[in-house]
Amino acid sequence: MISVCMATYNGEKYIEEQVTSILSQLAEEDELVVSDDGSTDKTLEILRKFNDKRIKIFHHNRNTVKIPFYLRSKLADKFYFAARNFENALNRAQGDYIFLSDQDDVWLPNKIETIMPYLDKDILVISDAWIVNSELEKIDKLSKYRLYVKGFLRNIYIRGGAPQGCVCAFTKNIKNYILPIPKNILTHDFWISLLSELKFKSEYIPEPLILHRRHSATVSRTEKSYHSFLYILKYRLFMFYECLKRYCFRK
Figure 1 (spheres, helix red, strand yellow):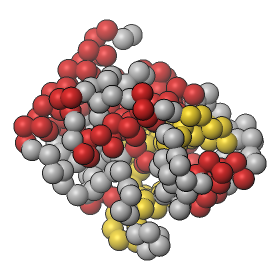
Figure 2 (cartoon, helix red, strand yellow):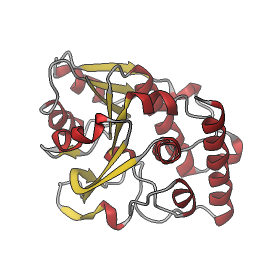
Figure 3 (cartoon, helix red, strand yellow):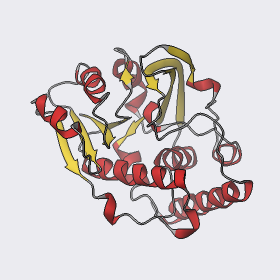
């Protein structure tokens, strides 16, 4: 059984196209687990109009989320909300194979069939993606900005080395291992990739398997961070500490 985990928040503009591209690749027993962070637009209405039992909607209250004061910044807050929303979706997922999905991308038709052969063991699978504009016109490959790097310490050290969640898939055992996400972790995808490098293995597929939209409301970014060197160093030390703690004390 496959679980596609999607975090939504005011995604009415593009979500119908993305959900359509996902459902066309799912079997009847699979599920699209949507965690909504309190959308005030027509996101939930669009999802319900599909009238598809594979779509399972859960609600996440962002008002209950408090980012630690030592991590606060305008962009960090957005990442933190997204991470907690994805964590809620992961907690609800029932499948043996987990795919992460943004609300505004489009999956290429061969995404699942290309990735599934790699998931016969506990492994994090990462693919490339086409970066596209709001009209789905290709701009560049994601790998130009997020070059895949193998190894725990190298991912800690290299900025931009960790993959974005939208190109990741993994097994239920990895999902159980990475949950819960520590409260001082901003980004779920960085956390998942680091723990997978430390505890399991990863595999990179250089073929682009999604169209990854970049637009004004996108939370994830490809350009360099505006955070200071000290902020980045502090955050990576948190990541290093939390990963080692999970590795040492979780069987």
